[in-house]
Image 1 (tube, rainbow, N blue to C red):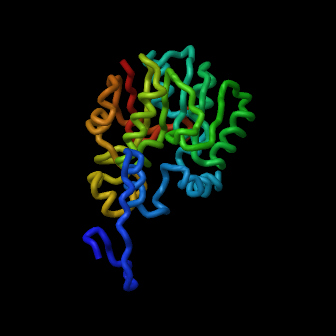
Image 2: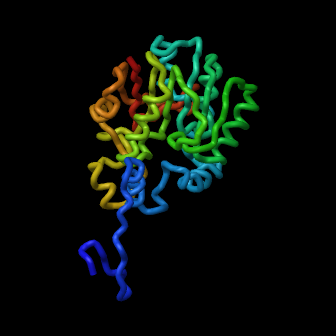
Image 3: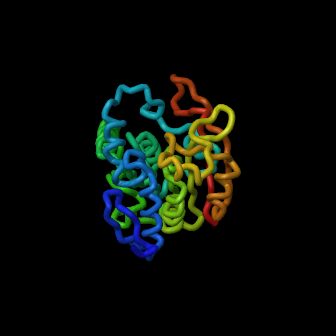
Amino acid sequence: MSPNDRHDGAGGTVRAARHIRTVDDVLGLLDGLFAPDADRWSGGGADWWDRFYADRDKPVPFFVAKPDENLVSYVERGLLPAGGGRALDLGCGPGRNSLHLASLGYEVDAVDLSPTAVRWAEERAREAGATGIRFVCGDAFAPGTALDGPYDLVYDSGCFHHLPPHRRIGYLALLDRVLAPGGHFALTTFAAGEGGMGSELPDADFYRKGALDGGLAYTDDSLRAVFADLTDVEVRRMRDESADSPAFGEAFLWTALFRRP
C-alpha cells in the first residue's frame, strides 16, 4: 500500500483522491465538512427552507408583512434615495422588503432558494398590486442564476449569517460583480454580545463541528472587516419595534449600511 492510500475499514484499500485544482474545488471540499442537513446556503438547502416556510402561522418574527425598520429609516434620513433605482433583495423570503422597495419606485430582483417562500412573496405582491418586482427562485451565488446588475442597492435581511465562513468569498464576489459604483449595500445579521443571537464560535470550530449552530453571530468590527472594501455609512443594532409598529425590528440583529466608492 502506498503512503497515499488508506484502509476502507473492510480489509481493502482506497486510492487517495487528488482532485483539487480550483478555488471552487476547495470551496466544495469545505462544504463537504458539514453534515448534509446543515446546508442552508446552497441549492441543497432549498428543501429545509421549504419546510420552514410551509407553515405561515408559525410565530416567526420576520413572517410579518412589513419592512425592516432600518430600511425605512435609511430612506427617511436621506441615506438611500427615495426615487428608486435597481435593487437586489438577497434571500427575499416572503417578500416584505421587496414590496417596500417597489413601493418606493425601485425595480427589484428578489431571489430566494425556497420555491415555497417565492410563491408566498408572489402572492403578497399580487394582493398588494405591486409592480416592478421580478422574483427569482435559485441560488444567488450560483453562476446560472439570472441576476443582471448593476444594482443601486443590494439588500440582505438574514441571509449572510447562514453562510459558512468560506462562502463569504462568493458573497463578496457577488457584491463586486453586481453592485454599481456609488451603490449601497445593506444587511441585517445576527449580533454577537449581550442581547444578540447566533453562535460566537471561532470560524475554524464550525468545520470541526460540521454545523453552523443556527447561524453565525458577528461583532460590528467583524462586519466592517469583512466588508472593508466598502465605505461604512452606519452600523448599529436594529431597533426593537412593537407589534403595532409599521416596521419590523428585533434588537438581536445588527443593521449595516455600506457604500461602494
